[in-house]
Image (tube, rainbow, N blue to C red; front, side, top):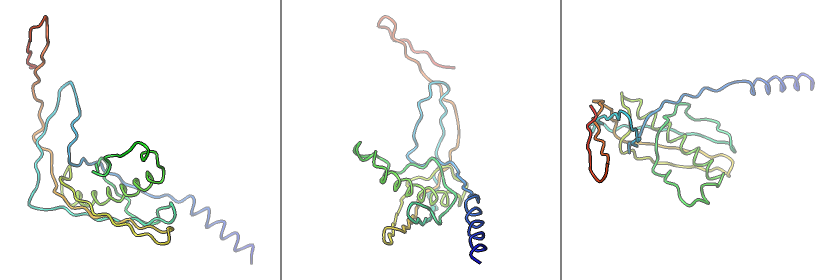
Amino acid sequence: MKKNISKLLFIFTITFLITSCVTTNKGFQSSPVITRNVELDPIKADIVVNQTTKLVGQSSSTYFLFFRVSGDNTCADGINYSTDAGGSTLSQFNPIKMMKTAKLNEVRSAAAYKALSSGDYDLLVHPNYTMTTKNYLGIVKIYECSVSGYGAKYQNFRTEKQKIVILENGKEITVVDK
């Protein structure tokens, strides 16, 4: 009897360890739009914001000790949060704070993904995040997030002509890129 139970426990453990999980990430860019300095062929676009409908998304994740037990497997990559502004350099090297921030960002990005997936949008403008953390004996933690904001789309992609100013012996020469 004990031999059968130990075999069953062994098979269950091996099965549990070799099963895989699926995670889906989709890249989005959030407001504020970060400009990238590109010297050759700068591309500009208009951002058209849909102000008639507010997007809403919600997500939650449950952690047992350091392990995620439940939560969404879809996330929006490229989302910037105002809480990522930093702080003192000493707090940046705190591994416990870094793990908590990573968990919170995962829940935020899942909520943003759900909000942006409700339509054909490229970015979330003026997002407002509401985070709730529930702590049960320090062993189980539940992170909940809801986000609301406006959906926006990039339109009218174009290359704009650049003016290059060269100083030569105190003279200013302007060349228009054609």
